Length: 134
Image (cartoon, rainbow, N blue to C red; front, side, top):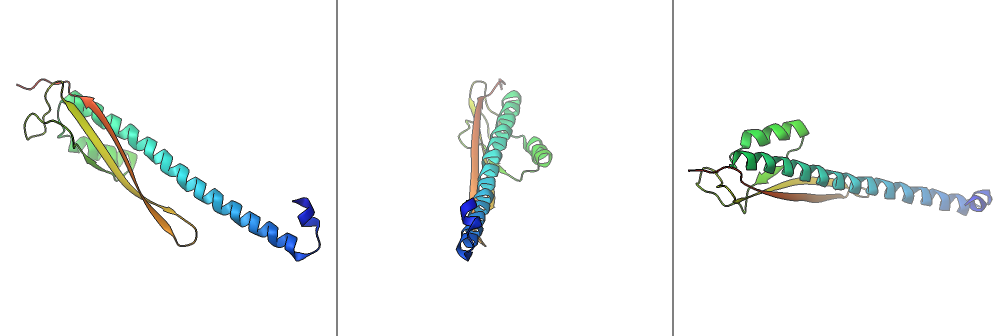
């Protein structure tokens, strides 16, 4: 690289400038990808926390708890308990039945120029209800 800089012709400077621009684009894109991976790990931790609370309470009617987590973590995710076997339609889950929580978060990462890549981060967690309903 030093040989190209010591070269008195302009082509060495152009090669160096292009190399620096490519390096900058690669760094920007890698930081965006790493932020998505970190977000996925945070979403998994939140899903585990929600499932732990739901299994302890024995119900999926915990919207106020989930809203508190959203404001605490600063994430605007959507949640669903699809795949859960309900005891009654009010959200109660019988002892030993599975509670499944799915979280979805939409994010856009910057590409090169004005390109924006929309990405959906989705994670799920499950647990067993610990409450017996009569």
